[in-house]
Structures are given as C-alpha cells and as structure tokens.
Length: 161
Image (tube, rainbow, N blue to C red; front, side, top):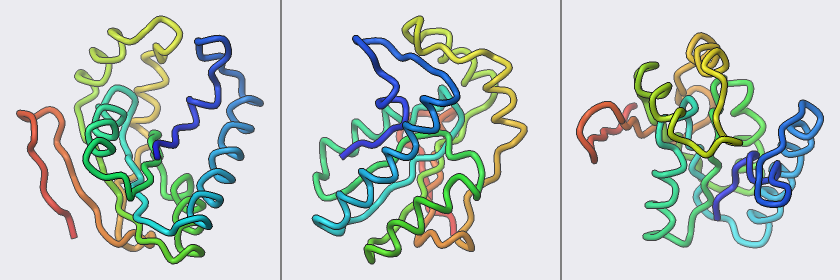
C-alpha cells in the first residue's frame, strides 16, 4: 500500500493544490493509514526526503517485492510531521521504519524540473524544506532508520542506529 498526500490532490488526472485541500489530504491519509492497520497490522515505512529525492521511485520498487508493508511517501521533513504517523502505527502495534532518501539540493532541483508540469514544486519551496529538514531519529519512536544516499551510485544504503 502506497500512501502519499499528493494522491489525494488529484482531480481529473492532475494535481490541484490549495492549503485547504492539502490539510484535507493529510487527514484522509491519517484515516486511511489507521484503517489499513486496523485490518491488518504490518510494517510501516515512512519514506522521508525533500521533493525530488527519489522517494516515490523507492516506494514503487519496494512494493513490487513486499505486499505486507505500508509506505507513507512525503517529505516528512520534521519530527512533528512524522509524530502522528508514528502514533497511529504504534496504536496498531505495527513496527515503523524511517527511510531517509538523502540528496543534495542541486540533485533535488534538477530532478524536480523533469516532473510533469502540474507536479513541479517551486525551487524556493524545495530550498525551504532543506532548511527546515530534521534528520529522522530513533528517539522519535522509529524502530529503525535506513539511510539511502541517492546522490551516490544506485543501491547505496546503510542502516543508521
């Protein structure tokens, strides 16, 4: 299962963003996560990183090989943004892994420019996420953190404890 708040912003095949729609998208994502875990507790992957880091690409590859997981795919740039997701998983007694897809600002900006027109994020917004970004920590309640350096050659990863 792949949960991304951007999926809830789609109208007629294109993404339509407003602050109100974004708030509603997150509330729907929280509800869908809770419902999915109530049906079947399973591992939750919080896929964390700036726009253009490769989060959705990682999720698509992961879901092809593991149907027993839920991937939440968003910038999740701060501990505060991650906390409610962790709380929902904890209530369901589901383990939570943070997957931090790390890239340089230059790489993120370059990849962003190749997106479909309605999915391009303003450069300033990506730079703001870089400034705000808080590295995930086990102290947040994550069971594990996987760091993937996506500026390095493909398949470079290591566990961070």
